[in-house]
Length: 270
Image (cartoon, rainbow, N blue to C red; front, side):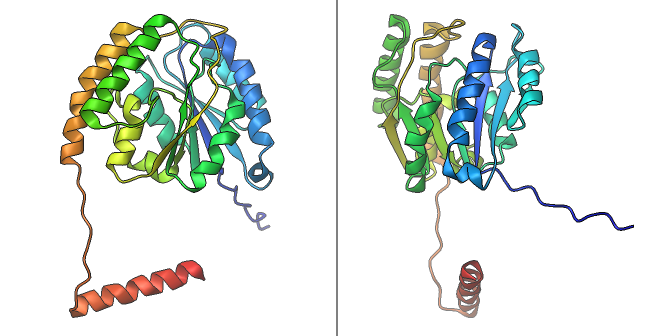
């Protein structure tokens, strides 16, 4: 007896990548809010979405709770690091695992409102990377001061025009996430790295909420100083990045290339 034909599962139209380090009390409300917001989108009627948590070596019970959420909700996926590797590794792993054509990133601390995601999404039709901007920040003095100092140096050294590159609420077109080659600490420079490869970028004000549970994992030592060190690496990459394009020739091979391009275009339209 022949087995029934396999029905292909549609590709997610959107993936949300959330690094998690000891955020147990925030995970249930964050998941519920994301499911509500994304489930209300028109595109979710015809294609699935996914919420991908990257457990970055949590020790507060976040890991088992994430597994419970994955069992409870089909849209929730979890990957567990064997130890703490940091945010850049978590984002890199999330980019590799994500299947959506659009990839939303955000922290798991509930200081971002998932309801702001629909504000960013329409701009992804025109821009390759849409960045959130926390204009009214609810941070302590140390974090605010370190962010302002870091912005001054980023602007001066690498010409970064983004006001709040540290805001993790972003929408990436898949091509951007696949193109970025990340190293430790490079999540702080997503806009500069994307622009370096010729991608278009914009920023949108988003809400920033006071932290209700848990504690911040970043301070003046592991936030400001590391980002200043990494500026040197980004500046070096900006000067060494490969950029090239082809000109149109007149020989036989050039004519063949043009014909192949026209066939390809007709195939795409057809």
